[in-house]
Length: 488
Image (cartoon, rainbow, N blue to C red; front, side, top):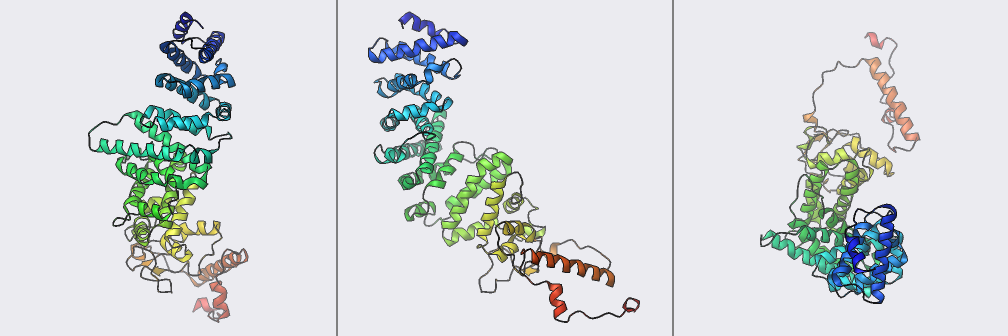
């Protein structure tokens, strides 16, 4: 392509149809020839790549970009050019191509440019523009290709490079906190791409997840430095920060020390719960499923591996208190009440399951304690679904002072007051209802209904408790009434 035709291409951004296809073909051919024998000046080469980027945003009539020849031409300019400007322009074209046409990803990997991308990411560690583009390109190649992630970690030091980039972002956020500089929007965008790449690498290559433990302190540090926005608590990069924590082996001894620091073991968990509090207010249905489910997974993991003081802290924060029990549990506006409400949400099944599982785990995975904490109404569904037997005393009123018969206090915040076993409400707080006393005939009909109900539940294997009506009958606690008993 001549210089004059290159300039013509620059003024033809509005070309469509056949004219666009013709121009794209000429640009790709010109860039290919330039690789074989330098035929373009730097500004001409960059101008053609810029034009190709514009054309490539819509793959219609831009086919030459997405061919093997097109991807290899762009890759050579991206990874071999001594000019960072030319390289960056070609990277933008590649990133668009890999995003729009998944088949192009294998072309790049098959030509070995995934390793070159890792090397370039390491070489340009100080540039957030290159971090953004290269992280996105490597991220896209993790889908539907033969990429060897283990090799990229072991031989190309990808985990070290990603962790180093995240550490740099930690420093940038520290500078922003000290108001010594403003954060460039591209910095958070680049961080988001690095975090997404970290998540995919750890997801598809879990055997190397420990390679990213070095990033854990910086991920947590950035999470604390980003102020929680009530109307957008999990906006990028917060959601990505949370997601990365799920795959890092937090249970490793050194990671436990980082996650639960000596002297303030609840520091990070408190941040997680703060995000949860704001998130369940803000997000609904699909957003709740997509954004809040990973946060709940992280909180459950923290509860599982944390020291006893963390477990107790989470019980205080998430289980119903005396204040919550002034009405049936799940009716108030506390974090505990809102979580219990969501535990039955039909529109968010993953969140529903995660919340119920979390509350069950905070109840020490004990069915009786679980029923006591939530009330039979909320607890029964989860127990039935997971084939956990309903405790025999589930329908008995209980006191918050009661232990479980083994000397171990029930994990609750409560202070020793009688509680309705079905609703979880304090009996003293229940509304008093004036009802006429049942007649003997009504009592007999109600007893018969209960007898039939318990018999069905027992036959279906739902409960193992003895039918109280049948038990009373066998123990001789029923007395035979005379025919004229009602007239007495």
